[in-house]
Length: 119
Image (tube, rainbow, N blue to C red):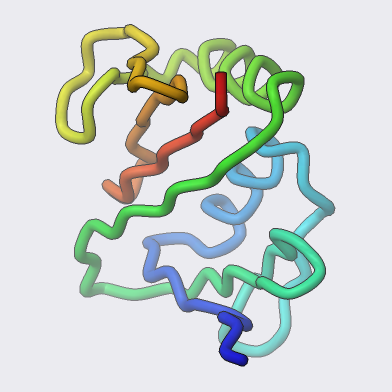
């Protein structure tokens, strides 16, 4: 068995970046330990935000239930973050596939987040 335990996300300000994601996704407050500001995504995965001068855009995609999808979408819009129906497009639309709906948004560091729900 193989299971992802954590990943490091390079950002300009680890506390701000971790705080935004916990706010948008309704996650527990981040914990700062050493070089990292850790956000517990679920029982087996942590995102470790780390200050960096060298930031390349990464993509993070999450399956969520319908209630969570609506909640996150509402929080993203309340923050005045423009969403997109495609990975690199910001058309302020929710996209659809055959069996799912999704939206994308960029955080202030340029990381591309995707939220998906099954229809």
